[in-house]
Image (cartoon, rainbow, N blue to C red):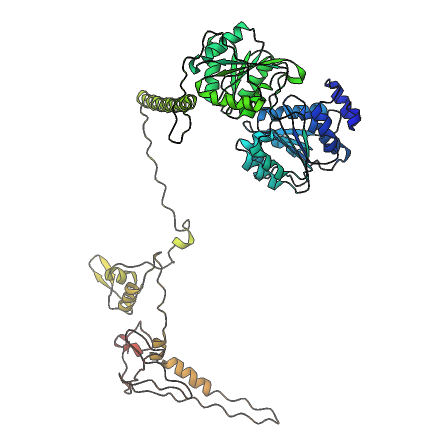
Length: 623
């Protein structure tokens, strides 16, 4: 069968021919037709068999036949690692170079500004890792409401190694009506049920059994103690003239240690893992692909999906805990039908893992016994309280991390002490500069003060009676001469009363006179109308009445109500109004609802409070 028989368009066929594709692989032959029809596909095949082309070609053709204005994200490919995301993006660019579609890749470890600019210009196909996709979606920079096709590559790793919550969260952002494609090299039973729940009536495509490794790969096994693995690795690389090799370790600390030991042995090596920056990982991978680095040491997550052409050797420095991972590791070599060699090291603690691998593959791995460092430690490591084997490499990695943190803290303290010492030395060496006296600002004039701080014109609060008398003295001729100076007569005119009123006037915080006392109901009841108000009422009553118009009867003027005086008695009860209820009696600590009754003086004698003016008492009148 050819690619033309699969129903692909001419632009895609020309791009595949430029890449050297002549006939489709088994996974491509079985997965492309249902994917072109819009069905959900679950593809499981060995790595290196062309799974990327199996979902990339149908996506490019479906999106190119029905373009959408505005270039929204119509297809999303989710991958576990940054390296795999970059490789898938390169494949989409190569297969769709003759189509007017735009593809972008986003991943963490680098600045997001260039990726955001690319998204703003419009993207049809987006390749992403879960972390960066969640960050940009949370910032409102990605719109997935018009998504048509969703692809989950390396589904077993995404679901089995901690990405299950991220996958479920991302699926909640996608529309319900979409096409879903799952592709993976292995499919363990523990994640099979979860995959079935995410797909809707999928077409299952399984080219080879999950446990069958590629037949063209030559496998070898060396029993060696953990402390001699690096020595054996260096000897094999030098004796067998290894062109390029990919070494898998259990931990990130182990990857760094193995790479450093190989460099000491004269072998160019580099390490990639999750703690490395994206720039360092890309540089190491680029140097390895172009031959500048002979050995690339990596962990399982960092090496997931690496597509390295003509990789001659794969070394399992540590056997994996999951048997399916072994199949994936050795599949890094022998790609596209080429030959390759997979060499594994096994110590006393990894015998159980070896048995699980041989049970899964259904065959025993050939053992090489003739080597300089045969295994001498036959007893496995002790187990913890839960019965789990205590892996020495994990304990070594934790100890190395603690030592690294301790060293970093010591370096930070030393740097801080050095900076403090330099600062003190600089202060001692520099001559002391004379301090300039700060000039006090001039006092603001009254016009410059804010309105709230200005005192009213003509008012000044007096502190003593002497000052009040001096301030209120009239500028007239009633002064007495005492020697060389004159002073006002303290008993002249209204000086005494004016000074008393000025001294007793309430003051506010800003220096202004305080508010007038509030009139209460009691004060209103006690107050008696003065002579002026009485005269005004009499004058109003004495005004001539207007003549009525002819034909109308004039109304009689209302007689003024007589003033009713009530005798005061401490025990007298208030008289209720007609038809009203008696108000409540005054209790302990309470007040009644009406003012106290006042007894009016019947005699004609007047005191000073009943005079027309408080400022001029009756004993100071001129008459």
